[in-house]
Amino acid sequence: MEKAVVAALEDIKARDIVVLKVAHLSPLFERVIIASADSTRQVKALADNVREKLKAFGAPVISVEGEESGEWVLVDLGAIVVHVMQPAIRQYYNLEELWDQPEPKRPRTRKKTAAAQPAAH
Image (cartoon, rainbow, N blue to C red):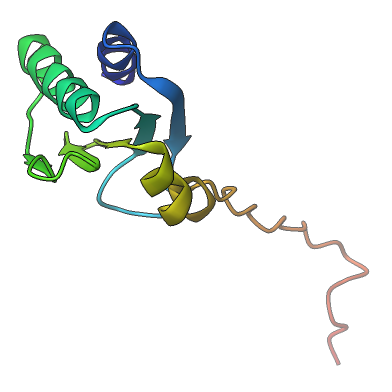
């Protein structure tokens, strides 16, 4: 599904496409895809193309928000949320900084050794 979204964005010449893995940050979705467009018309065209290509792919399109203004359109595909933004809006909200957080490392577990166990009295 991720490849289909990126292909749909590339079809309409989206710029600066970024795919972020965010499953460790949110239980609601696994990926955030962010792309830039040069005009309100292109923002709307990119969001429409993503919606149409993913519907044809058989993926559910849960909702589309922001089409009225065309500065920032969000396409909710369930496991993937797509943000298509004009550069000034993208820079202002800086979603990459918000969502591009490393997955926390799990603490190592040590095996107990005979020396590490308390002595029985």
